[in-house]
Length: 152
Image (cartoon, rainbow, N blue to C red; front, side, top):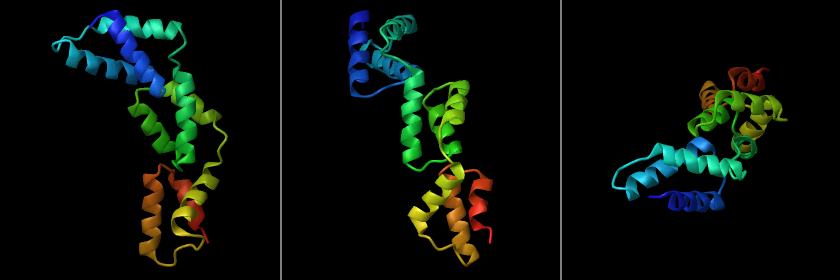
């Protein structure tokens, strides 16, 4: 694969959705492996990424912001959001900055997520309470956000 082919492939990917730099690097690396007789030229990929950066097609800050909004709408808590963004290859400092600046009351969000799934009534037995706690933990809420709801 040459510069132009790889650049066009990257533009094709970016035309469909936003990618972070690390995620796009991985996709381009996989494409090069498939199309280039299993030979990967990481310098070529870096050159193409630099060109995309110069043209403002890559912006990790914007992508993290958009993903953060999406994950909040889906009802994810801060722990889950952090995990999802780390898996996409974003740096910890960028993730932390966006989590600090997001305008969400996480306690209210946890209540909203629990209510949407289980209704307004608080559980009366231990088994049901445990089920709801596990659900909220899997959604990425901290323990204090979860247990605050069940205080009575």
